[in-house]
Image 1: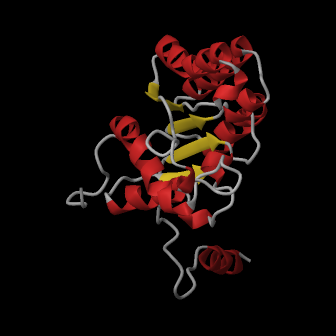
Image 2: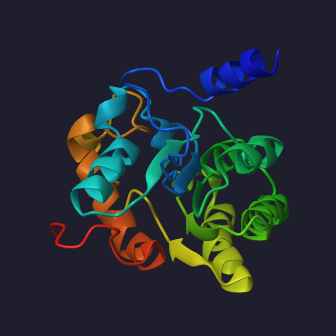
Image 3: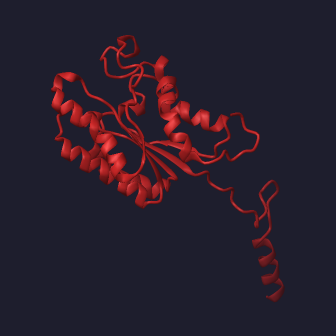
Length: 220
């Protein structure tokens, strides 16, 4: 019986051909960069690989930044919807960075500005409370909502960023908004050809949050 037990213990730790050693440590998981956005980040109307978030993932990889990009964007999402989802996203992904690109659909629905600011502030606080660095991305709404509302709406993003002391992209569509050729037939969603310009708008505010590249000698 003793001899049998000894053989069983040897078999229990035997390594099959081609299997990693039992003592090998699991490969470290790259920190997550989560984009919590709406259709502007979900890539509405274009192929997923054409959107600015997918382009961001490729740039981070090419330049040696050790992040895995998680696009948690949903077309039609509002700040309230983001608040309902962010707890789960944070718990699952444990992100190092969270990019919050929400508010466009709130503005198109005429959400009171005070509620928009409160929701944006809560999103930032939850992300920071989970240990993430935060980038807030703003947007504009059409002027036919009235000058008072449109300006108060647009001012909500820098106000929240200043109060919460987080990085800000004032207007995601800066540089493309005035040319209808940059948009799909709905005149709301950018075409694939201008997605690199959206990334170029986000990058200067995002890069300081990334830290140095994880790989030495990576392309800059």
